[in-house]
Amino acid sequence: MIEAIRTHVMGAERIHADDTTVPVLAKLKTVTGRIWTYVRDDRPFGGKDPPAAAFHYSRSRAGEHPRGHLASYVGLMQADAFDGYNQLYEAQRKPAPILEAACWSHGRRKFVDLVKQGEAPIASEAVRRIDMLFEIERSINGQTPEQRLVVRRERSRPLIADLEIWMRQQRALLSTKNDTAKAINYLFNRWEAFTRFLDDGRVCLTNNAAERALRGVAVGRRNWTFAGSDAGGHRAAAVYTLIETCKMNDVDPQAWLADVLARLPDHPANKVADLLPWNWKANQHSKVAVAA
Image (cartoon, rainbow, N blue to C red; front, side, top):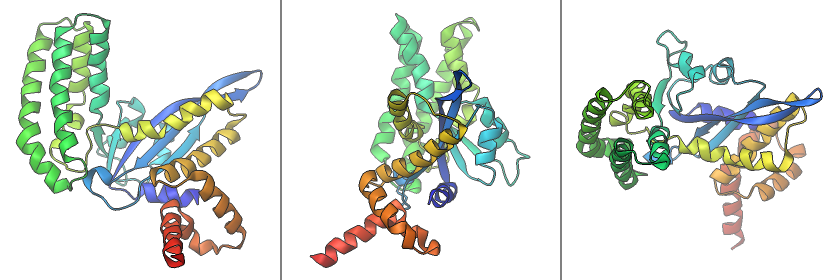
């Protein structure tokens, strides 16, 4: 079941990626492990395939882990500027390089933090300009890639061109050690990835889908405190895969688990797909319709 969900996620044209910490019990102490998530959600660009989230656990945040998780994946990946992903984007990567799409929420957040610290006119203006892009995106959410691209080329591209010119002008006035200059450079260091949405209607402006998927892990940390072992971390990732995928498909995880666990012993192995949350939901609706 879990592998079927992971296969479905890796079959997407575009995924979201992110990770978070998880305490893991070791000898007389806890160490910091990682929970990784890869999310498939085609709904922002009008896709009809069901959404899903695949989770993995690792003891460290080394780049070898996402490289292993994504060994066969080819497509777009929305993610933050984590150096551990860099080899995935290299031209010589096999079977092909993954196309990076950067998260404007991360870029915007750096300016917002400066505004919160006190008077920061450049950062405040950067936030205003970026918010104009988000306003356009809200108006095209759920439309087809082609429809989104038309609007972005007409309305967003001029804003991006003006933003680039303005940021270069402001950066020239600042010390390289200035925090506002660092926030600007965060964008420019991955400018191609930040502006990829102008040429591909499937790309979202943010990586919020992955961040939402990880919220359950954050809640879990407060409840169960730590994973008892590496094996416990892997089991937690498996459970999160099932529960988050249910939630993304508007399926009650408890009801789904109770029914699936009861049916699994006699269910044909070659029909596991029938029990995936989105298929299970469709079957439940069919039963209700027949009963009516």
